Picture 1 (cartoon, rainbow, N blue to C red):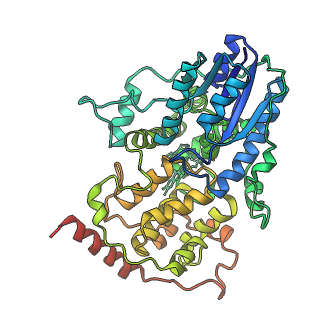
Picture 2 (picture 1 turned 30 degrees about the horizontal axis):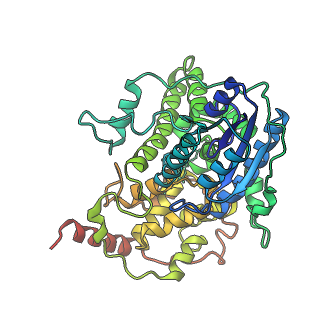
Picture 3 (picture 1 turned 120 degrees about the horizontal axis):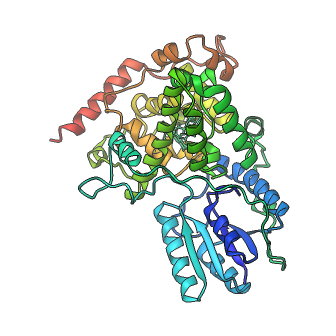
Amino acid sequence: RPSIVWFRDDLRLADHPALNAAAEHGAPIIAVYVLDEQSPGIRPLGGAARWWLHGSLTALAASLERLGVPLVLRRGAAGTVITELAASIDAGAVLWNRRYGAAERAVDTAVKTDLRAAGVLAHSFAGSLLFEPWTIMTGAGGSYSVFTPFWRACNAGPPPREPYPAPLALTGWSSAVDSEPLTSWALEPTKPDWAGGLRAAWTPGETAAHELLDAFLRDTLPRYATERDAPAEEATSRLSPHLRWGEISPYQVWHATQKVQRTATGGAAASGIRFLTELGWREFAWHVLFHTPDLATVNLRRDYDAFPWPPLDDRVLSAWQQGRTGFALVDAGMRELWRTGSMHNRVRMVTASFLIKNLLIDWRQGEQWFWDTLVDADSASNPFGWQWVAGSGADAAPYFRVFNPELQAKKFDPNQEYIRQNITEWGTDAYPAPIVDLGETRRAALAAYAAIKRPT
Ligand code: FAD
């Protein structure tokens, strides 16, 4: 009886605990990916994410094929698809790596129950997070809402396990099983094809992820701590979409960095610690999402529910989305996002702060735009980042912190390199005039915040 390995946000072969367990089990393996647009509560993928998924599944299918394992593609409610597939091929086991969103967990729990009731071994593994959200709890038994003690608690326990090596050989299931052609899912845009900039910026897949990590650790890590905030410096790893899709695991990143750390001194050593701390923020975002599943829709701090958002002006929102606000760092970031499907972290903070605190537009509008345009959009880090900037989130920036886009540009892009890379008409009359007055809008936002702090 074959074993099914159900791939989800872990589109890789190395350090894949479920695949590893299937290989050890010894039965012939069949791999499956389900595009689930039907189960209740699963957030439909954004456009940039769909583009990435196409490339990542193509790479995964090719790697599996080299090892003789078929990748079956199906669309539908994942619970039904998996249980029916297991029954149709008389599978002995279904194995997967865990997911941490509420809707995804509900699907997985139901599948597990159904499979076990049918006499099929169903087992899940930890592959996507270093510290599973329910294992890190405060002394009082609650979840963490402040990063530093959270990360301290993570590091107080045993270090993350060593990654599993890539399988050298696998036994594939040889009987034919129906699979939908990937192209029938229309994940890639066609009319119009807006993905040219994404293709130029990124190569989805496990091989590219490891090349990026190796190059980062070899060439860039020593200057990470000092230059990671400067968007023109290319001093960060750019691993986020690869981590999002699980083409590389945090265990692999963690241990590869630790290995470099052991011989690093001075600035390089500080850089390694800083980089691992950023991985810690990814863990924290998932911890917060696990314990507050409606992070993308509900203010973590409920006093923010009373914030008096003015009626939405679509023209102002479009100017922000299209990078036509007249504030160069904001516009450069929004255009980078549209062109490449990504944006530097510092600029994410500046553009988000500008939307919320200078345009007075609800953070959920910005979160949704990022969700649709980021290749790394994930259901934890994106709403977590937005609530952090809004001041309504976990360990968030205080509400009175309003990033001034002009001062941020002077500080982090002093030679306007990043601005010029992204705004071709910069410095000419064609560049739009500012759509708001920074000082006035800042004062209005602070007054609105002050009002909800002192409810009458
Ligand atoms: P590096 O600096 O090289 O960091 C290494 C890894 O650590 C990243 O790949 C990422 O997995 C993780 N990481 C770093 N910073 C953060 C952070 N603040 N929160 C969570 N994880 C972090 N990150 C996403 O992965 N997906 C998102 O949808 C997302 N949305 C964001 C929205 C806003 C408003 C903000 C302010 C931040 C958001 N981030 C998101 C976090 C951060 O901007 C990106 O992870 C980072 O820019 C990715 O670039 P990098 O891989 O070069 O990062």
